[in-house]
Amino acid sequence: MQPKSIVLALSALCLPLSGVGAPAPAQAAEQNRSFHVDCAAADGGDGSRADPWNTLAPVNARTFRPGDSILLKRGSTCTAQQLHPKGSGTEGRPITIDAYGSGAKPKLAGAGQVTDVVRLADQEYWEIRNLDISNKGDAAATRRGVHITRSDSGTGTHYRLSGLDIHDVNGNRTKKDDDASAGIFFEVLGHTKATRFDDVVIENNTVRTVDRYGIHFWTRWMRRPELNNANCGTTCGPWTPQTRVVIRGNTVTDIGGDAVVPHHTEGAVVEHNRVDGFREREPAHCAAGLWGWNTDRALFQYNEVSGGKSECDGQGLDIDEANTGTVYQYNYSHDNEGGFILLCNGSGSTSADNVVRYNISQNDGGQLFDMVCARTSNTQIHNNTFYLSEPVDIVNNANGSTGADVAFSNNIFHVATPEAAYVNAGSLAFDSNVFHGHHPAGEPADANKLAADPGLTAPGTATSRTDTDGYRLRAGSPALANGKVMASPGTRDYFGNQVTAGCVPDRGAHQLSTSCTTPPAPVPAGKHENG
Image (tube, rainbow, N blue to C red; front, side, top):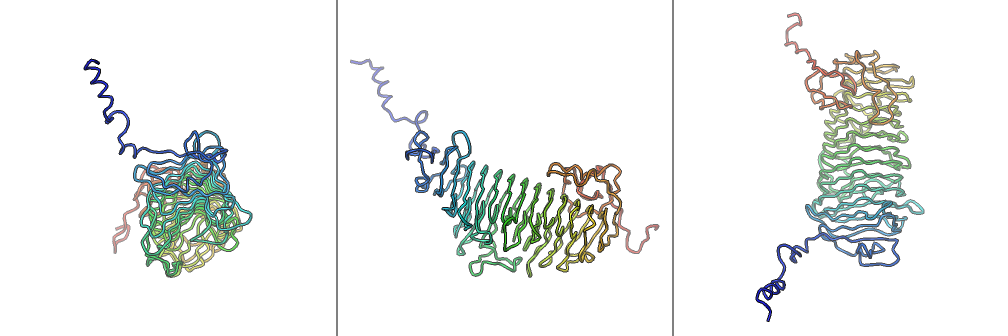
């Protein structure tokens, strides 16, 4: 007979485990699961790291649970396959697509055999990272790298795209807006239930050699009084903008049409992106670099944009139809054949209260400011610095804008080319600008004009957004502390120096003065300055 103490100990070992030790069934169901894919493996396995799947078919056949991970082996290539997993994550437990192992990012080479290489539809809480994605076929056709859609499914939230290399997508070069070709495309379809994307972060990706868009947003839920030209016919729903959209730190190059276009968004932030080369292969439509259509309060800042081709449109920036409260600040635009910025509202639409401040433009040509289509309202252009050495129309006012529509204040125009002109600029509002160098016919009147050398350190020598010190003002510059006081000047200049509301600013994109000069008090009505 065994001692009683031993019997009790053996009995305890047979009891169900709880607390410390193996998880209870409910806890086990919450554990994150990982599924592995190696398209170079000889045989298809069970999805474990030791025995991975060797095609994307098992991934596409599965509905994944919150917290799951789909991991593709570095150094492998999945050719002519689409990655279209099912399921959604939840708050705090997104579903992740990522790489495992060592070496180059796993390649998803659509080879023109799939329309979308990576596809999500009516799903949310997804994070997609560290993939090499291409989709080049024998001839151009509708193709995308990453295509995420929602259709009559309400709000989808939490999408993260990072570390993706998307390239060589020879899409349809002429199809714009919906069902367009792009490197990254967020698209809202349907017209029976208001639907939108929320909390989208696209950061630190490269998008190159793609037709037609680099990064593109579109929705059929666009109708509102500010937009008179909704182009989705009977399929349009009331304006339901995409919210909490951030496009940050991406490099977008060699794009057939538009580079980065967060259309139909509210409060989008587009910052620290590098765009070089757009409208490279667009035979039918105009295109620009960074801009939105039918947006509210879009913020474009700390971007570098260059290489826009042709004069249709070819500008680095664009305030377009139904843009309200757009701000372009701290951007470096250069060597765009079309110019610096397009101001192009749609007939019967409202584009109002937009601001372009503390930007630097070097060697932009074409129409530096191209005012076409219908007029915008209350567009404030202030404290920018322009160095012009290419043939250029500095202002092309082709839509009859007046001072109430577009006002230029505290800008520096350093005109280093004799091939410059102003076209119908006289009706616009100019106050406290610097016009230095060549003075072409049509140069606008400005009661507080400065024609002297503003004392820029080394204009024309910038090499990147962070190498623009040549546009700082020297001590003793005649442009110091004598600009127009702006009602909403922002908080800093291009270089990060403080700008204080209510103080007389320096002219141009550099605020060198650190002490506050207050404007003279207004003279009471009926009084003379000498009392």
